[in-house]
View 1: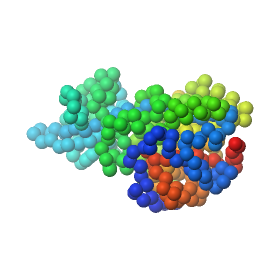
View 2: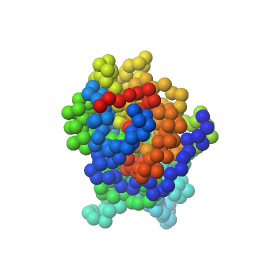
View 3: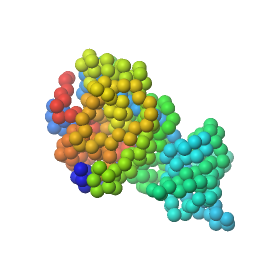
View 4: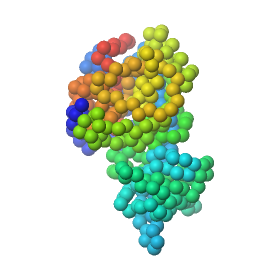
Length: 361
């Protein structure tokens, strides 16, 4: 399909720079249920589902991989910012850096804690290689757990570019940009639909008879990359590592067998479940997935999707268009803009039903 079919206009003021508080006070646009669109609140999610439904959350944990420092080349130095996007081995990371033109192989780098309080803390590295798409490979002087601890100490949360370009990371982002159930380190971007959940909302879902299950997909920086190809067939997805345990697969299949619906919390949960689906059942899965879902895809694992509002021309907007229909989602996004919904990672959410689905009270 032509990429420009997935474009839409979004006023800049609709982009949320901070989340609402409490988390479940965000708005929730219900799409494709008994009415075309319904304006609700995230805290009302339990009454939009029914007993026996199964929510699936991505329990990856975002690591603070946004670094600031200087490049040294002989007597010359320059300020740089870097975001680590994929670990290569014990001391090497694939990295995005800006300004990229200031770096070349062999440069020495010194990253420091950006705050003024406390003792000075640094990590040093060498630019080991430059990739074809403006990416770099950094070889750090530390390795293994020592490197992990150092990155955690001096790094900031890797806020999406549409937020980081308008404000600096703040201490509160360490909690705001992390789900309350995050358990496994490895993501460089948050599974943002899950940011809306609070202990109170989880308890209300339990009372409703909705079960909660967890999978792990370590979200990569590719989630923010626009589709540059003129046609979706020319786009190559970045692979991300994920796991669906045998216990979770068994529980989800059993829930469906009893008439419950599988509700993916976030596109990352959906992509992993669809990667694990075979012949109408969810199988245990452990490995990388580069699944790219566009209109025409037949969903085999997920019945309902809760997700935030996505970037134009992004693979995620293509996914929701595949789930509900491109015309429906364009109309839904236009409704959201008119109605003052907050967009993107810190914004509001939608609860999406395919056209043939029905809800019960």
